[in-house]
Image (cartoon, helix red, strand yellow):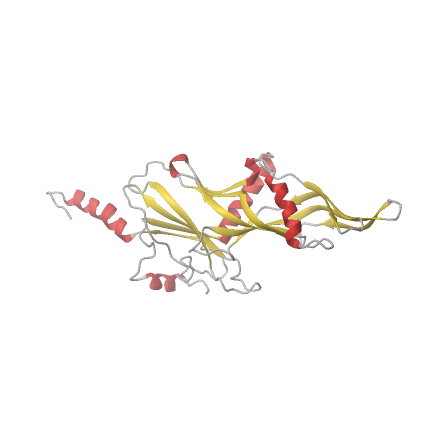
Length: 294
């Protein structure tokens, strides 16, 4: 599946419900979520509040005295991708952290207990190893100013895309999982936007549900579609009724394509039923008066 151009998308939406019974539907894509995560990363870097500090750790392996020493490991801004996301399931994405600084020193032990260095690997901002994990996206309450949240306490399936001797990527990932579990709450949480319950007439949001979906669940790793997808917010507005259904991964992808990828990063849909009953109907009755009831 690829993104439809705007005119083709509008045509595909004709004659069917795209909001599946909800008052409003908001989607934003991989590019927009990662822009938000990068902005948060820069803000935390500048203030020093909530920043994940450089990590140092020792990784022994085998029975011959081999040890990998990781010094001052620095991570990039988190990046989301949607290759594991299905609209039918709980909202899950893949979260990747690039290792952009630090040093990995490999040592071994000679007979007699003398330790010596076998390799020194300096990590650079480009082309370094990565740490990735599967991440549940959580939500707060509208009335409390809550919204879409990444909380690392709900991450699992940690992997580092490098091996250490006999240790597999998953084993190394588990060592990083233990490190992340010890972080402060403000270091683990990354908000992806809020729904504020400020009064906005009939368009005031009162509750919402989150889903995620991949653009193309079967995309090849090398293809541009791989990892692309969207966070979807199914919103109930003031005096509205919660929907009971959600689209699936084979339904129409509702963010239009734009060629160079510079124009459309999201979509907002308002239910035609809600629009007619809560906006048009009331305005017509108020404007015409004379006891008119539609």
